[in-house]
Amino acid sequence: MTQYQRHIDVDNLWQTILAEAQQVADDTPLLKAFYEQNILQHHAYYAALAHVLAEKLADSPASIEAWRKFILELITQHQSIAIAASKDLLCQLRNNAAIKHLHTPLLYFGGYQALQCYRLAHACWLNHQSAMANYIQSRVVYLFGVDIHPAAQIGAGIFMDHAVGIVIGETSVVEDDVTLFQGVTLGGTGKGSGDRHPKVRRGAFIGSGAQVFGNIEIGAQAKVGGGAVVVNTVAAGSTVVGPTAKPPGHHIFSSKE
Image 1 (cartoon, rainbow, N blue to C red):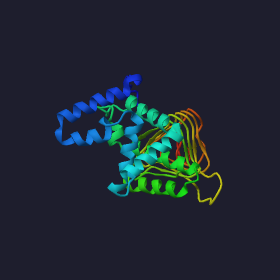
Image 2: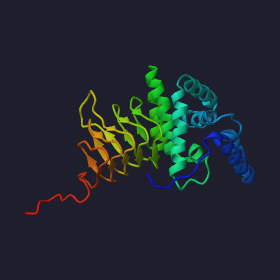
Image 3: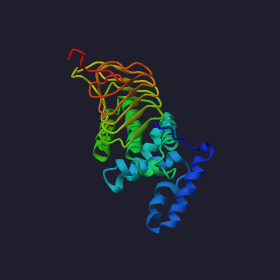
Image 4: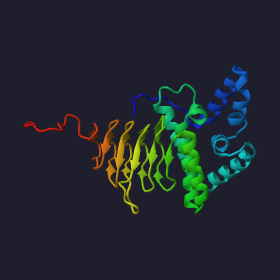
């Protein structure tokens, strides 16, 4: 995570987003209807999120409203979805200097949208609605190039930057405040059943293209450099880099070589 920090008025976040969206709608007439449909007509952030995700998940325009109602019902039953979505949003807003408007992740960030779709799929999985969970998973792969198994356990305040190519396996655990860049794989090692995927602890950072395999642990606040291949546990607070995931400064070859 970068050292950049934007101050956010959390108590008035939705009102600020509404004001921003209205300004954009006024300044850009071609986008007025888009902003009205996705933000301005809604009374709360979670309601706008439900509409945005419904438009992504629906297989036809005629089913958008049914999807919106279904998503709102899921959020009502599982309030943790809305809580996590808000924490994910705040994580993006506070730490991503590229964001110029507070509504940008909601409308335009595929990684943020894919993560919220996973949360819906996970709720369906817990409700024994496996067909719905699998449909959402496959739709997310098609739309965003992100493949998260609905059984995976993912916390809140997740920073999934760019996100394309992220793969998270069935028994993976990703705790709160984790950063995942594009192309990260949390995969198994070929074992057909059982607990076979990584456990990424709170505050860990995994750089772009890193591949983490097996039921191993990436410790709290640990950092995995881009392109690393990790098959052994990474201790809390430590850093590993390179294709063999060694600590910085570690020589692969001995002095005799």
